[in-house]
Amino acid sequence: MEAEVAEANRKAAEEAARKAEEETRKRLEAEKISKKKLEEEIAAAKAKALEEAEKNKIIVPEINTPVVAPAEKVTRTESGTSAYQAKTWKCYIEYPDKVPREYCEPSGRLLNQAVKQGIRTIPGCRIVEEGDTRFRT
Image 1 (spheres, rainbow, N blue to C red):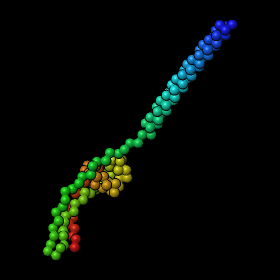
Image 2: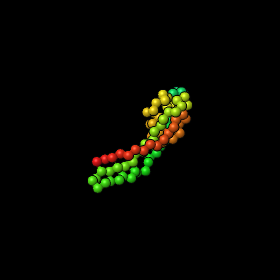
Image 3: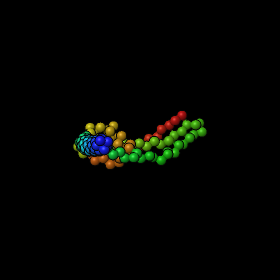
Image 4: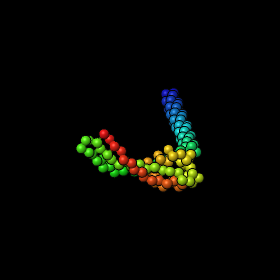
């Protein structure tokens, strides 16, 4: 009788171990499937975000580095008055229809701003460096 009980206990233990192993295997498979789904969703979201970013892409205008003029010579008198030559670049519109659309209006303010940033050729415009003498007392 004890042999039968021991056999029944052994079979029950084997059955319980088999069921536990099967449950563990099913749980691992479910985790693997859910992880794969999550990775696919993340990949799809990334692809959609890249597509949206490409669609709403902002084009940054290229800005030339400003041209820095060398230091001007200052002349001082005995009384302390100084005089120096100041030079500024100016742009005058000669042919408004040839001015590029990036300067939009064409307004002198926008064109002068571009010239100050170092642009020296603009279609339809004449760019010159003007000098004037300034006095300080």
